[in-house]
Image 1 (tube, rainbow, N blue to C red):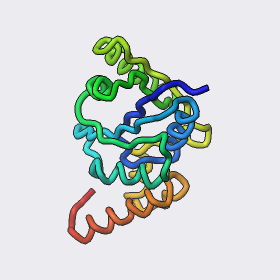
Image 2: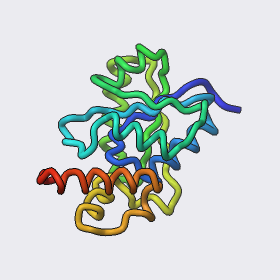
Image 3: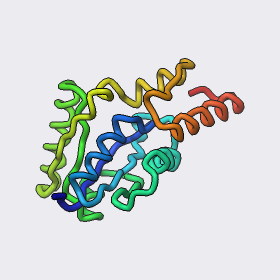
Length: 169
């Protein structure tokens, strides 16, 4: 039996197979999942929010239970606006827990109805992070084992466009 709606927020710069695993399993637990793609300017994302949303959509295909939307500002404000009070977060390792736990407590302090559900990715993806995927790609490595084909294609297009324009990453 599935519960109501949930939000899976993240920067997704880029979305990788670990993220997609958590999203797909979340849809089995909830009637619908909002994938909230955060601007997260302090992290200095490589891709624009629109490009990251495109990568998520193309990777997931058309699933009416999944909505991909931009996230600006506080997650709490987003949750209130959408009237969704369950947040999904992925935990790869114990090292993720401390930060995620602090965020969950802060979110609950700001909005007491907000609850966080933690999912661990499939064991095959526990080592994956967007930062590592970007590093491998930027150093000329093959990322096809870590991302979907649409993400790999968009990533290579971005690298090509930036090198043509003389921009560094």
